[in-house]
Image (cartoon, rainbow, N blue to C red; front, side):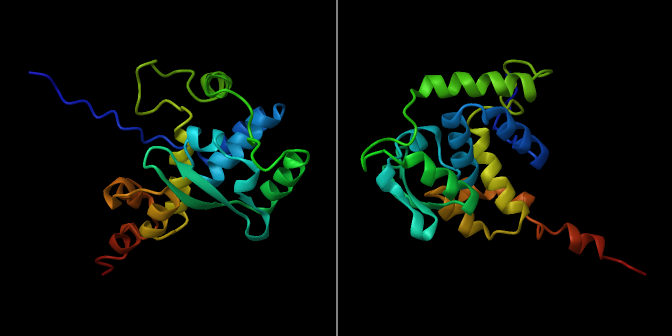
Length: 188
């Protein structure tokens, strides 16, 4: 009889690890922009690589994201620091030019080198649950939203999840998960 293996990815980057990642990617503008977009929108790799200049809305700090998995579009948001970086980056680009003009495998390979040296040193190659991979950036986005008290339905919308059950995995990270209520019980 086989044991059922729980290998759902749960790993997300802590704040200190995010700083390390951003520091490691700063030397390659395309990689730094990719990491920032992934961490601020939660978009998947294919979504970010399909972004064009025309998808950025500087007036509202928003960006139109194409979800290739669900064949839909949705809106993501970014902070003022990324806005300034994007303004500089898109100068000279035409409306239909891609923000990141690199192949998927190039991005994957460059990020994997960073993940391996910075976060995955002591992990088995087949440890799907704990290894940091490109998709970990999406989990990081959602996890930090939950940790900061973002309502689960807002997280669902920002991730463009069609089913709330996909989003509920982040509910356990929310500060209102009940921990404080249990701590207050039975104060005699």
